[in-house]
Length: 308
Image 1 (cartoon, rainbow, N blue to C red):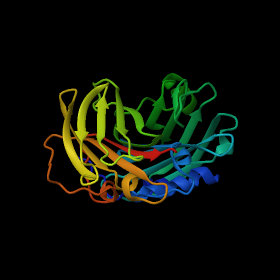
Image 2: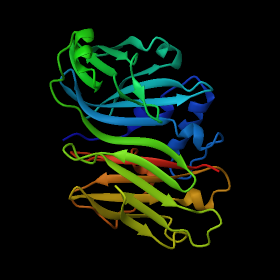
Image 3: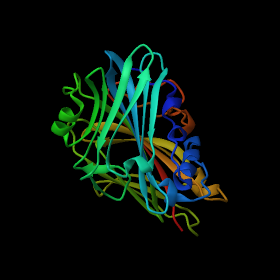
């Protein structure tokens, strides 16, 4: 059973992007109510995914961060690896925007006691949506001692040929995803809560501008699954919903929306669970900082920024 302890190795601030728009969003890791001088537009362009994998036969957690910023919207990539048992940060690589100029590349790192960790990418034909991460026609591969640690993208054959490594000895498991979204009163994202389940459309709606008694609504595939009234008094909380017959615990913290005098974000977490604990107190700052057993579950963390 893998444990995700202190993921400081994977914090947004660990991805050093050489432009002001991206670096300003690193401060949002402080939790709900985190402030960004540049507003939601910059913070929106960042997605981090955490995967369970194996590195030289040892269980590890791999973090992949995609970001986009600057005037021309350059893409940057960060990869960090942590030992899943000890919590030790093994290595971290930051691919600056200018290294993506040719859309193909390679980078290697020497890790004590393990060997050489190599990173390959090909985004020359990649297709992007509104977010910073590619959707198709690409690959990103992490290899150690000719063993595939992590393989992302749909160009799997090309990745294996380029790296000289075989397919991963075990399937990597996505255990957490964190992204920034923006809107005036409607915020949307997509997520797959189980490996065999379908990808769902998540819509969060909350109008706080000039509303005396704001209400929070969450829909999954247009179906209303949660409504929170008297939000001024219930600005933090959690509730269980069902998705694909699976219990999903929803946590929300909208204090920043309601009470902050500066640009601030609300935070939502959707976490699959076997036996949800409704009375569990929750602070976003503890989500990745406190010891947490991920097991087979999945967590989606959304930073929702209001755009004026």
